[in-house]
Image (cartoon, one colour):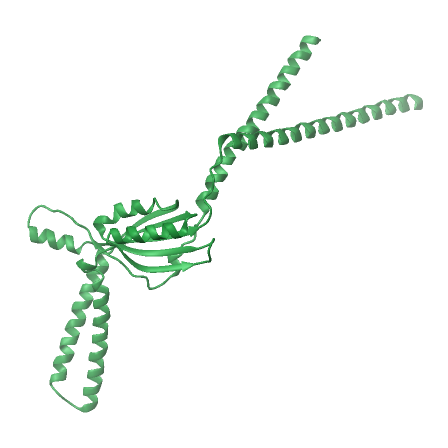
Amino acid sequence: MASNFKTRFWKLGKWSLGIFILLFAFRLLYGYVAQDSTSSNDYSDNFFGSIDNLRKNYASEKVVMKGDVQAASNIASSQKFEKTASIKSKTSEFEKDENIIKQKTKSYNAIIQYEQNLGQKGNRQIHLLIGINPAKFDQFYLELQKIGVLKATEVTKVDKTNEYRQLNAKKISIEKMLASLNELKSKGGQIEDFISLNNKILEVEEQLQGLGVELGNFNTENEFCTIRFSMYEGATEKSISFIHRTKVALEWSIKYFAIIVITSLFLSLTLFILLLIVDKLQIINAIAKKLNN
């Protein structure tokens, strides 16, 4: 009898210990996962995505090809792309890090093409659109990541070769149209026709000027890659130690293990009482049947 009781006791103890360890491991792991999830969701808004008419920067893909040097040069110059990096960081030394950003921008001969400052002291933000020489892009991108506490990064590269070729084709077409209109103008005619033709020439010239501005962004001297840098002011988060995580996980495990044990005991007691009631009812029914007989 004593041996059977000890066996049941050790079996129950093992199950209890297993449940407690499972609860502890779950809470400890949850602490890491919840922390990572919270960190990754910070500053998920895209400030630059809501702003229109931002400067577009383009660069040429430098390709070395065998064969005719001139042909290789033409191919390389026609391969255009737009490369954009986004960096989001947080800092408790806002003014100091703002100065560092601008000093590094100057040292890399980069250009701040757009700047927006928001918020009051203690909760400030700065958003910069920086144009950087393609050859210096990678190094400058890595340097900016060291400013403040890095929260998010992203690099996007989009091929713009077809767009560049289409703009050139459109420019040639408009130039031909303008030449034809100027030729008609030189032939003379009625005053109404002359005024209408002159207005048409002005309209085409405006289109050509607008197209020239777009194509100007693709010129070699205007070649840049873009870095969108957003910095937010705030106290940096302190890392949570393993001992603290263990303490929290242990407290949580003890609490919920106790709840499970108490709930189990309550359910067992309730079931035991119900079984006793059923058993008593059966005895009462049996006595009633004998009395009736």
